[in-house]
Length: 172
Image (cartoon, rainbow, N blue to C red):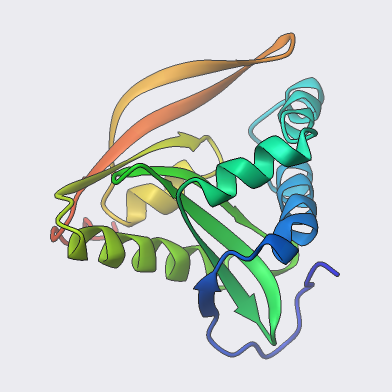
């Protein structure tokens, strides 16, 4: 079951990824790409992006190879974040029904605190166009634009970096 919006949510709880989460996290990825990226990417780009997650064993390995945190609301997974290596945010997805309700912010906050506690001085992310605003508000600075090849499509993203311990830029 993928969460949908309800009038009153408590703050997200966080826990480590468990192998039993694989199916729901795949559903969150696919729904998130399909519903939240439609303003930034074409239908063919979205299809190629979703197809990049068709290899479930490879996705499971990706989640297990780093630090993956799952945010839950009312006990159900609402989103997740994965840290690759010590300083690269690899994945960040939130169920569309609870987007813009603090789930992604909670996940990024947690990964930043964990990385900083491990002695990491900066975090890096290859942010999709739909994720750039979230990371910008959190103090991540754009470094360069890139394109990633997925099947026959090219998807633009932005390499961003945040020095840990720095406060986010004020909103204007």
